Length: 319
Ligand SMILES: Nc1nc2c(c(=O)[nH]1)N[C@H]1C(S)=C(S)[C@@H](COP(=O)(O)O)O[C@H]1N2
Ligand SMILES: [Mo]
Image (cartoon, rainbow, N blue to C red; front, side, top):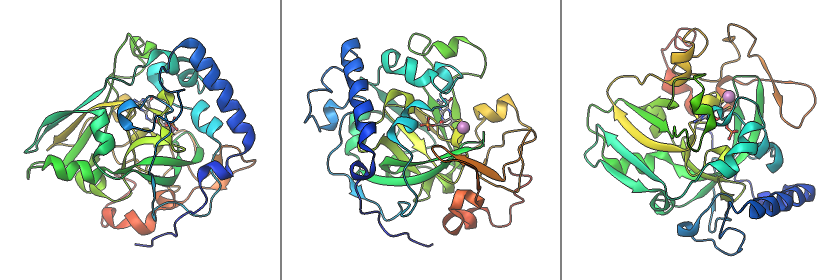
């Protein structure tokens, strides 16, 4: 495994100032709408007070962060989103989710083939392990990509504490599906709730994180507050947002996009420029904020770390 050098410039120093201006406007609007009570009272770094967009303290720099690619702007990361529970346009999640979704109080049920099933409050998840910044390259199956400074810790920290039994072969992530908070779930575009899953060794891989924030703050609603999964070598849709249930199971989970269209979306969904989507090529990508296209890398550039997970598998069959 090749370990990349830590990125030693804090995100706040590379983010163009204009973005912070935009951010302030957003905060003003948010405060006006009364949707982030407590958050604007700066200095609340305590996870127990966390609302969407609360600054997080004591984040460690991870050696697994990408070292050399410029970050996608905070504005693009938080306004160009896929989150169909809030609509299918890129700007629907940031238009609708900030006022509609309530990420507190929030619990996550951890169940299935484990010795320690329990329901945890999301604020406990903030204290489970040391928060790290993980700058990851992200690739959407639609052909665009971003570089995002996520905040979280290895999902393996949670898995170890759950004590999986020998029958736990896969792990399933179930997103919230509440029609009161999510107008999109009243529309049968997908089979709600949104379900994603990983094989246990993929879930245990050090690159897979339980994600609680980005750009040094708790997740904004449109990015999947209060808790989501991030798996950087797979297409974006594997990264389920606003998770309410984590299930350890024996059989491969029936995941939302594979159910919706099994010919176009497989369970593995590893970023693979050699396997075209039936309706378009996956060879290149548009990095949001850049002109032109760049070639898509095998396993999204994480091949040195993850290729061994798929040794001997036909990646055209298991796409
Ligand atoms: N619950 C849920 N999770 C989801 C989605 C969704 O529609 N619903 N979209 C996925 C897709 S296709 C992508 S590309 C990423 C986008 O994450 P981002 O908006 O934080 O960049 O979220 C993924 N997780
Ligand atoms: Mo996506």
